[in-house]
Image 1 (cartoon, rainbow, N blue to C red):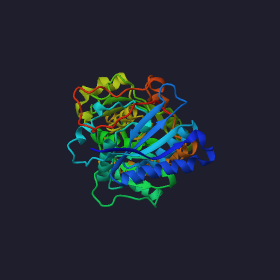
Image 2: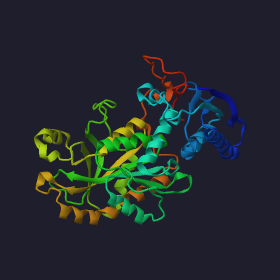
Image 3: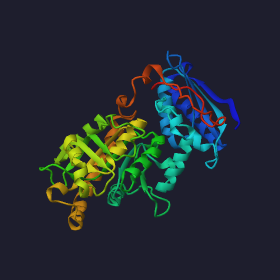
Image 4: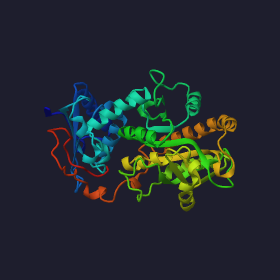
Length: 417
């Protein structure tokens, strides 16, 4: 695979007035998009004289136009520190049918503690964008910074009613249909109906991660476990009991996973302002839709964990958000109480859904708008970084076998900007 390292554009921001930064960053992004249109993985090199431990950052991108808002924001931060940023055409992009793709997207060969701007290999970005287009029926450029996930088509209906100018799938029958309320700079809100189950939750968050969303909020229904919960009460997850199994090999169960504190604070403020009944606590996520039919196998876990609700997606979304350093939170509504003679029965469920779904979606949209207004630079995420990131950086892992030439992107890791 040929590599073209000839500079397309280089900008030394230490010599440029701050008032001109936005224009120059736009030029850098234009150069990256032009290289991508030529079938390349545009290469971005950042020299940072202000950084003692990580003076050089280096990475490649696929479809930079789809994350232009993110590139502009991160480059703006680097520019403010006086970095020198250069763009070259980079490697020829792999066809997604190329046999080298398998090793290039293998995350066991990629350090997930890399500088967040360069977290993913371009092959991984390209594959995820293609998968998302397939699952959701919408183009990558439509995804907004603030993402809502649900497992009910009813929530999608309410989302479209609340934001009637949304853009949706290009054809019916998509596995995970998405709708996007598009605003300049991708500051709108996207909602995806991910379907039911932990596997679907992992699939969508695996691929959403390449867009670097500022927020992923799971809204859905759950089984209440406490005596004093009522049907329709809301549950705000503070932490999760992971019994979904799908990420155990990638994130040990000994690793605590919690909701983003700032997101939870905003959600709690919204619930309080509306005078809604809610409880905060641990959500137990299972892969078994009929867990109550095998109660003896899970009741000790429920008791010891002090969980107050059971669902099938929330812990998976939160765990993958933790892995990929994306702020997540969960807001569920109690639809049944199987341990208290209130199983989910068709007639009761229909009444509950009709009464709760608009309110549920309105809360999620309101919080997304608050995040956009209060945290345009992104939510605080220090808790999602490992202790060795800020100063030492991380080298790419040694490989037991050499990968095909140029099958994985070059470049050292770095710290957060």
